[in-house]
Structures are given as structure tokens and as C-alpha cells.
Image (cartoon, rainbow over all chains, first blue to last red; front, side):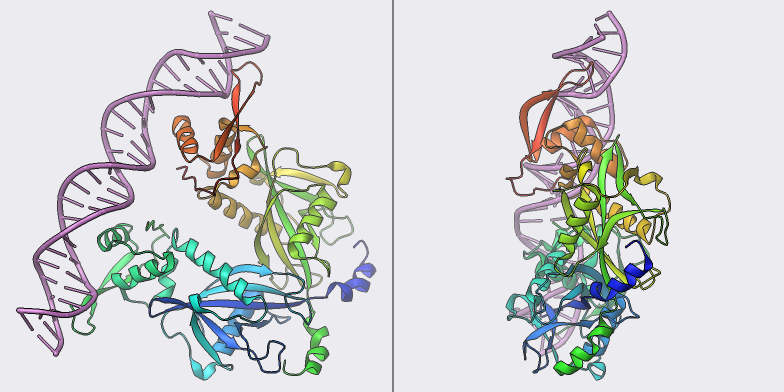
Length: 230
Length: 230
DNA sequence: ACAAAAGTGTTGGATGTACACCCATGA
DNA sequence: TCATGGGTGTACATCCAACACTTTTGT
């Protein structure tokens, strides 16, 4: 790469790969961690298999912008928490061409989809019950689950899986599902209230026949104090 | 992307980017966290500036293989701990072409270089004293430092910055440098020995005029138990 | 009055922190 | 014998885990 000519001459050879992004978008459904899938077109080599939402990165967008765009255009999801997960560059991961994919993890709360904007068929499946997905997408989901499980322990990331206002029982259920064990209600409440990241909204929610629960929200003004639940 | 023709016709347009990798290789020098830099060629647009070690990803290699290759070919470094850091895809990060870089963090112990294999001029600089680097490499280094600082708290990653055998004082110094505060010697030793990841090699190291220190090594057989130093 | 989830305190054990002196060695 | 880093124990405070019953509501 010493002269400009050399660069230009070889440029076509160096541009051998297509860039893509895949988004592992999680959401809690009936206390199960669920992932957003989209149906591949019936003419693709994975004809009819389910895949993550994603697609090509365009020349004038960053990987993150591309992930946002695909989430919105394909699934009608906008404005959710998102973080870069890992870049998958195995040579044969797409049998047709070399495709390098920058994967993202996204976390949504209830009912995040505006289906009028969704261009492809999507569905949510519990992560414990996934079929064989297209490409290496099972592997990508696994990496995302590991990341989410580990971050729940030392960050307040759980908030992105909940609506704006939620009960302490809702929050506890998210923790319990993600770490896979039950927690003591009294200890959980004391700890989560002690670290001072929740605000009592003074609202309550009645459901059915039980005593109404008070609703809390996360105080995003405070510095991200760690929560050491178990 | 419905027909094969459409794919082939547009493929050249979709291959707009060059893929590269950049490696943030850390090492402790005189109790300072230091990073490996390489000199850019004097004909590059960053003529003479220092940059991370890295380069293009080739058609037949993964990002990780490419990072390994560049570390070896350019800096003569082989067989070090390595983990994927982040993928940088900002549109203007290389002023000449669109270059998407998959960055890695590498951790080396003392004197990891075989300089007979190093093809370019390199040096190690303390991270607290870096000049303006080429491209967005200052930003990449910052991400790597943040990652390392945070992982030191809940993993045993410190081991990769030390030689095979080391004293407890060596290990404590790595922790102290990375977290930026001093630790109590007795508490540090008790905790690190309690978690049962170190093996007493029965060797000792004398240096200068002091009492010899016993050398330990990490027991990689054990499951990666966490160390909660501070 | 009952069903169902909300909400609430205490105690014993474990863990973490603060702290200062003697030891082994080579010069 | 001195200078240097190596190595050791205890007491107090704090944090964490285990544990069960009362409250509020709608039917």
C-alpha cells in the first residue's frame, strides 16, 4: 500500500465482502425471553426458514444506522435500546458470497411494533424453543443471550425490557427469568430500592381481583449505579 | 434481493467497503499500561503518524485470523490473549475509502515481540501519554482501555498481562495500575488466594537485595471463578 | 369470607475493611 | 546492621440470606 496506484488497482480485489447487520431483538412475553424473527423469502437458499431481522449495510450508513433502519423497515420497531454485540466474519457463513455481519442486540418492551410499517412477516419466539434458523443465526442468538444474562448481573439493563412504568414484581420477574432462578421478594425489593434508581410514580395498577401494585419508573438522571441482585 | 440476477447486478455496488482490523495490544511496562503502536508509512495521508497495528482483512481469512496475522507480520507478536472489541464503521473514518474495522484487544506479557519477524517500526507507549494517532485510533484505544478496566473487576483477565510465573506483588501491581488505586496487601493476598485460582509453584524469585518472593501461576484447569478485588 | 398478589423486619452468618509489625536477604 | 520488599492475623463493621405473616382489593 505504498502508492496511490497500487491502492486503486487492488481496490476491487479488496472489496470482496458484503457488509450486513443482524439484530437480536429481545422482548419478554409471558415471562419468557423471546426473540424477533423474520421469514426469509421463499426464493432464498434458506427458503422459508426464519432468520434474525437484518440486511445489508448501505454505502452511506453506519452499521448502527443500518441496524436501526432494518428494524424499522422490516419489523416496524423504532427507538429501542441497542448495543453492538459482535461481528461475525466466518468465511462460509453465507454460502453465496462472503458476508460479514455486525450483529446488534436490541431490547424492547411490550408491543414495540408498528405493524403498518413492517414490510416482512415477523414473529416472536421464546429463546428456549427456537427452530433451526437461517445462516449462523442460532449462534448469534446464543451470543446475545449470554451477553444479556451476564449484563443483567452488573447493569440496569433490565429496564429496557419493561414499559415506562412497572411494578416491582414485574421487575423481579425479568431478573428471575434471565438468571433462571427465583429470588426472595423481600430481599429483592430492599436491594433494588436501596440502590436508589427507582422512582415511585404514585400510580398504581390494579389487575383482576388483587390488591393494586404501585408503579415505579427508572430514574435515568442518576448515574448508572450497579445492582447486585444475587 | 429476490432474484439471482438482481443480486449479481448489484453486487459490485454493495461491495463498497474495505474490511480491516486494528489491534489494541496492551502490555505492562514499568507498572504503566502501554500500547503497541506502529509507524505509518511516510507516503500515507497520515504520513509518519503512529497508529495501531492492523491492516486489511483478506478474502480468505476471518477478522480474528487477520488480527493475528498483522500482529505477527508487523510486530512479531504471536500467541497472545485476544478478544474482539468493537467494529468501527463510521463513514469518514478513513478519508480515502470506506473502511470498516473490526478492532481487537490483545494482552501480552513482558517482551512478547520476536523482532526478527517484525516488518514495521513499532514502539510501546504508556496509554496516559499518547500522541494524536492516525485515523480514529485514539478512540479505539479509549474503548479498549474502558473494556480492560471494567473486565479487571469481574474476570481473571489480569493473568494475560503477566508472565507464566509471577509474584503476588506483581499481580497486585497490575490490579492497582488498572483500577487506579492502591490496595491493601494483606486483604489482596487473602482474597486472591481464597478464590483458589493460583498455584504456588514453589519457585522463588530473588531480585536485588530483598527477601525472595514466591512465584505463582494461574490454574487454568479451574473454572473461571470471579475475583472481586475491591 | 376467600382468593390472589402486594407489601413488610429481624436475625445470624459471612464477607469485607482497616490496620502494623516481623522476616529474609545481600550488600 | 541496614535497606528493601515479602509475608502474616485480628477485630469491627457491613452486607447478605433465610425466613412467614398481614394487607388490600374484587367477587
